[in-house]
Image (cartoon, rainbow, N blue to C red; front, side, top):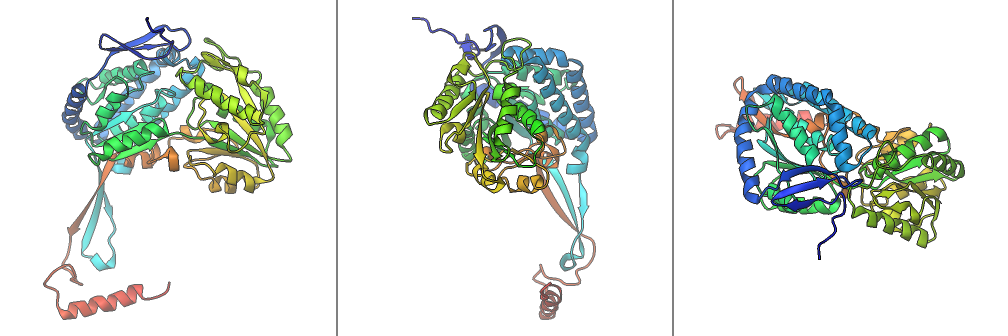
Length: 500
């Protein structure tokens, strides 16, 4: 009996990975599947290419990265249409995603020298006869394993910074969006035709595992927490360092003095953009008692106006068909345990689409509150005050982003969130700000992409000391005398013996 192919589910035919639209089933791409040997060869080629790329220096790399940025910008409609076809994302959302990625390419290219370049570091009295020098040298080859939900913005957040730092990159796109990944690689090859500096390998999870074991110098992964643990375990075999951006269950807190219209608008966007398939998406809201009812009414009114469908709608299909079962299970559990659907509900799941669903009075130990849903659903629960809201927001093992709406205490509350990022009176905005690092804590992973921290993730700190004069306080030598030791003791007491 022939198995029925579910649109959007990747399949392998004749050694090729076939990608299809989750909305229509139309073929979006057909790429060769890499074997473990293919991956190893790609990394070997990248290793030699990386030496050439590093040799271009910051100026040469900047010029080429900015040309890559220009090619993508000039063909933004083409790429947005491919993102829409392959993943189902509305074209407008795809344009916003690509624009944000362009900003990160631009920032990384323009700031790599300042952040990573050689510099002199001041010495202290104890080693005053030496000067210090610091620079960040490229790892060589970085493996990037990308997700399907933001197939342009997220991998570029690692790849562009790794490239700006002087590394070659071997990229394993998600098997759900391989055509988008290959498009990015092909456009880079147009501006850097000399060497395979940025290449792609395609396939299922075994190809990602092969990349982890291929001898790359570092791996940057974005995906689920469960897969992040597998990546880390594979990399641990060879002590390959990893950067992990894993799942999230971000919360929004709405204080009594919040602008409720602005909060509702940001909440609906943060929760439902990309059909809720956003790692930093708002999945939980804690609104204080005084504003809870009014806030829920405003959220329902806004979310209820959104359209769902294949073309021109606000929300597209669920990209990964198996996620539909997760979303359905979370809604059913929430309603079955006493929660109320004030918008949508169990009938909202209509494959390949899920209509906006807002749930209230959902128990805190339910799966809809505690597990990542990755769909256009939202729980909104009532709390006494912001202290209770913070406690509930921080109760989970995830810690990616978050949002706070309010006036007097909003920034102070945002600082209390156990998360790598937070936005005040907005949602998701930290992702687009190239001057801020991006990453989480706990089950949301570790390491940072974007900004200065993101550049430093892809360079090894190299420290160098250089003697510039004779030692007045010889210490690190067998030639030191008892008198030298006595002087060292005196200096230690003078410098460090005071309580201030």
